[in-house]
Length: 431
Ligand code: ADP
Ligand code: MG
Image (cartoon, rainbow, N blue to C red):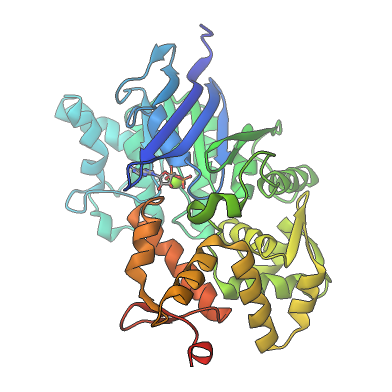
């Protein structure tokens, strides 16, 4: 066994049972190694299994396949050297910051005096000296997340797993906290030997990590890896950082590898990018106008349109799916149809949108087809939710249907009544 290896995953797979009993493969053939001294960032679409992977590493969830080891030992249950930080602060509201931080130590039977001392030291370290007595509601979001991090650090974890730990914070607060964490790490003021961060912010990953893993979805697996190899602290505006950000954008928006089923083949189980019509049209408009005039580098587009990666990437993917834009090596450009779209008047836009929706989104086609089969031309949304729940968790099914409804109404391929929850054929055609 290599003494520098902290966590090692070999051929890990995980499925969840859907409502109808069929298995949904969330992770497949995942190989991954976290070594001493490195920060690794994991990037991937929402739903690609990143959180599940972290939980497997932490021993909170078991893999169905493959092996997971921590310092050479198989992981069966929660490993004491591994700590996790979540996106939501998950603090106990009735406990003070200090009490929240002490919880893990208490569970380990550490005596009160030592607990207090360690919690104090860690609160100091993370910039919360003097706030130990505050209740979570008395703290800002950034400070609450600092408590969350303190709670992990007080255990002196060997490995720290951070699941979108900075995402719920506003940009500036997130960056400050991120830089503070890096400083603690780079100056070896924490005992942690390896950090894995899940992020949906490409710049964040490039600024923090020694190595970036890009994840594929459905099923989740490692698509590619980018070595960063720049000293920290890094300058976000330096050409090296910009070039790496470019490279990662290109990887993130690459077409899935050959052999991945098309949306049509995936049918109702196809998880289309979740984005709103306004967002898609907003991106199209920025893309069409100067300075881009139809072709843009994705990071520049993100900057110009002032939207975050987790909003931009699904919007771009949806534009690709609808045939309005194409993405190639980190650049996005309008297709001829996209050109026509941006110049079209409202009614024509909606007609193009509806046509492309029917052609490329199986769920929308299924809804339309089902309504056409109904003598009344109407069906309760519940019917469609039930079919979706064969593939997705209930809250996901709801979100997916909501987007499909919004898209379908815009494209006028069906209507929806908020009072009755009925999906209907458009009035014009039903009459
Ligand atoms: P990510 O963190 O990349 O957004 P997750 O790991 O949270 O992805 O989820 C990946 C997929 O696994 C999702 O489709 C989610 O619905 C499914 N999933 C996660 N946990 C469960 C569970 N306990 N039961 C059923 N499905 C789950
Ligand atoms: Mg997640």
